[in-house]
Length: 492
Image (cartoon, rainbow, N blue to C red):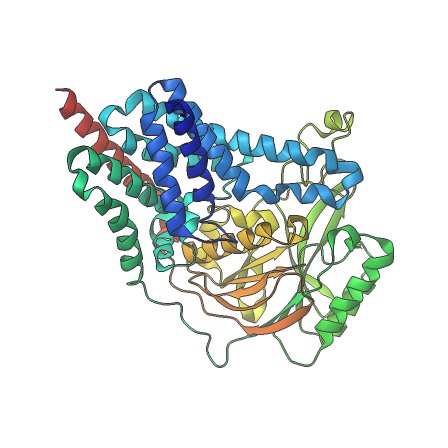
């Protein structure tokens, strides 16, 4: 017979694994809900503070291990140099992120009492907020993201990803609270809350369709494998591939190349930039490349018009241990370098989010790769933007979960702000995304090609675009006050 402790920890691990299946490429939200139910059950069975903390930590470790298993992929690009780091990266990332869940379990055990399920839901939501901002933040795999393919995702435009996460967690919390007082009806809140999210989400108006005279944007996907992308023998091949697709018949108002699409330095020699503009027939082109200021290297997006740079943006939120290494000079002594850095110890961050004026197309809010995972980045600027421009190189992420999850995160930003997203990825998935996060047209993963897609219109600024996290904070506070009041009455 298994001991109660083994059963509890096994239930936590199973719950974490099932909860992770709510995210791409599986996208099974109801399976994820069952996983969360198992996690709540295991934390509820913990008899001590330490047991509650370790139980929640184990569930979180399995959850993050499954969701973010793709983190080993970047280390295989140059396996001889970085391959040894891969298992450590997965173990430390999953275990480190799970510490936030462990803290939520400890808080639930310490303050919950008879309301432990509700306190755990509140603490877990707060933990997800903290991990999204602390140490530059990593809001990947947020619980609310399991709904991106359904109408419940409409709640992103009202309460943001953390608010949707809290509403999701109220389902399993309600199950165990109801089971304590009316066991026969315990399943009601567990089923009713997700169904209510879905039904109310259907009340939101659909994304407007592109007008007949809407500007057409060409999305270029060169499909350059990461291990060859910077190889001098191959860089010219990928460059010419993009030139040829840019010069194909058609008259797009804008052509977009992906992040660091050109393996060249942006210097005073503008011959390549003129060549790109000529291939586009003099029409606008936006592309990613490295920009240099002395010894500083910046990951940049530039807009070209007749060979002249008319607008630019430097990536401001860099990937720790990817594009830069904290204390890089010290870490280099141990053989640890940023994976994506081309020179020195890494990239330099730009000054912050900014709009790019693309003339008749309006203003675009550029997000380079990793930046699209942050709900608040550039949110205040999105009210003045016609669309978001997401340039990325997902070749780092492999061919399974990573690129698909990154696409879903871009769709979440569209939902939150009511803004279409022009997403161009080196190896895919490149897509035209409407203002409700729907994919209008796309190029599949690991395919070379381009599409010409009409730009969907933006919608009026959403509640989230106008007020950010305030609606979520009020929702969380109301739930916390309700829990506090109920707990006070129960102890009187």
